Amino acid sequence: MDLRSMLEFPAFQNAFLAGTLVAIVAGCVGYFLLLRGLTFAGHALSHVGFAGAAGALLLGVDPIFGLLAFTLLAGIGIGAMGRRPDERDITIGIIMTLMLALGSLFIALYHGYAEQAYSVLFGTVMGISRTDVMVTLVLCMAVLAGLAIFFRMLLFASFDPGVAEARGVPVKLIAMIFMVFVAVTVSLSVQVVGVLLIFTLLVGPAAAAMNLTASPMRALFISVFLAVAYSWLGIYLAIRQDYPVTFCISTLAFIGFLASKMIASPFIRRLLATARPEAPHFHGGERGAA
Amino acid sequence: MNVAAASGISRASGPPGGANREAAGLAVSLENLVYTIGGNRILDGLSGTIVQGEFVTILGPNGAGKSTLLKLLLGLLKPDSGSVRVFGKQPRRGNSDIGYVPQHHVLEIDNALRAQDVVGFGLDGNRWGIALPSRQRGQRIERALADVSARHLKNEPIGHLSGGEQQRILIAQALISNPRMLLLDEPFSNLDLAHEREIVGQISRLARERNITVLLVSHDINPLLTVTNRVLFLSNGRAALGLPDEVINSQTLSRLYNAPVEVARLSGRIFVLGVEI
Image (cartoon, rainbow over the protein chains, first blue to last red):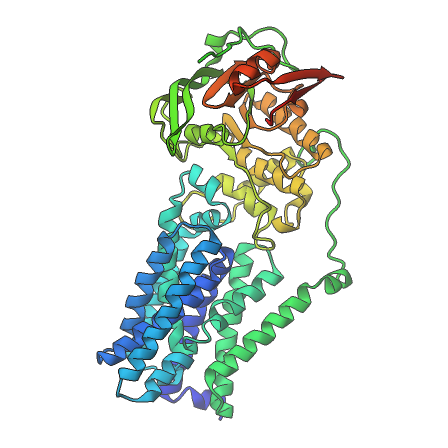
């Protein structure tokens, strides 16, 4: 089956639509997640989301609501935690394990389709409804708008919270708002790649992008481009070869990351002669353009 | 608490003659400033003034309140009692008149941002939205980098730079908004002596050219002897503010530390023996 005929099926249309939207948001949020050293928190949120989704199933409610409720709560909690990274990670780790255990309890109590539980863990992009796509669209637009509004302050606060705060940036507030964005992104991404492989879209593309460039705008662009490419290619291959979607996307993300590492390696850089520019030999500082 | 006040400014290098204290305008004014951390009076009734354009080195052992004083001036902390005035007004966060270079661990985000991005934060990192690419913005960033002899590092990832280069970038970030005051908290901790001298020279030159008040926290007065106007020495809640010779002597320091301190002068350098500063 080629791409054109694939796109005639509503189920596949929805898959590509949802996949694209989620990839765009995950590519953007993932960049900041890496910048802020919060990838572990992102990973933890997916496990928290799992408990929420499983709990929702138990209550007979659409899992996305459980995902959003739990991840938002946990996300704001993490954002409010101002502690040192190692202390914070221990707390997050403990809560995350509890959540995973809680989720397994909910699953055990749930007498519905085991398939739904499986799809929360591994992604369910083929089962996404048009309504889900609409919800995803609205939430994606909201997160992207939020990122645009806070862009400069978020970048500054991520790089240097001390100076940023002295310059009037509300660092604590931004930390919490950002975690809200992460919570929503994680909840949406779980639809496509599932809880266990959240890093695929959240970290993979951004990590590759950051290996290739140090310019924020360029890194964001590459991150989004890669995320969307992985999703499209992954869904296409999955339909064609009848492999699980998440497996295809994950493999592509892995290959992409490896490739970026090789391109950025010192060996290649020397080959391309991207040498560091020489300092001009002046005393007492240079005076701008001659 | 005794504050040894200087009468007139004697610049180590630059325009000769004492400037009239009143005419020059006050950059910082402290009156009976008290700040407590966990029951300890870190600053115990600190009073004194700093005139616009002065270069003041802040010395003292760890925990003496040096960083705390900077944060009080920035409005990041509020005094328990007494008053702090910066350019005649209450300190507030986001005051673009003050450039700040806090103590930096080696920057963790190794590849993520370029030098020009970091300098750009000083320009508009605290504004909403996304920066529109503009030639004027680019030129201002380039000029700020040139001021610290770092224009050639514009596109380098900040993590690839040496400690000295990173420090220059951060100073450029603090200066790009044309502040009237520059606060530096131990800017030399990651640097070797040669780089230290280079940066001291750059800071003092830029400060003189633009009449910027500089408050620099350090552990060693020697690299700064030729550029500093006065010294503020903090210890045990007490303080002494005055010319280097007035403050850094056996008598004054022994009083501040409440312990015998010996100050020796050898080949134009000052050595404080018996305690850590």
